[in-house]
Length: 86
Image (cartoon, rainbow, N blue to C red; front, side):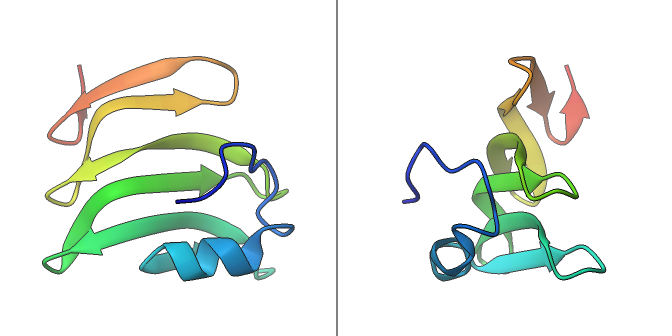
């Protein structure tokens, strides 16, 4: 698991890459999102980053869809059920 204090994808790039199964990148090679994969679909924790490399949201995927509470850096949370905002 990654340290809770991660706020900059570039500073922790090696840790992120080794801790997650799939990484999406912005065109400039900055990390956009890091996912856990189980049984071929997104399952488990994911971290989304903005274009400057700062964490924008953290949450969980279940069976390939966002599920449960997703916390954003501005302290807003969004609740998903099967990929749809509740």
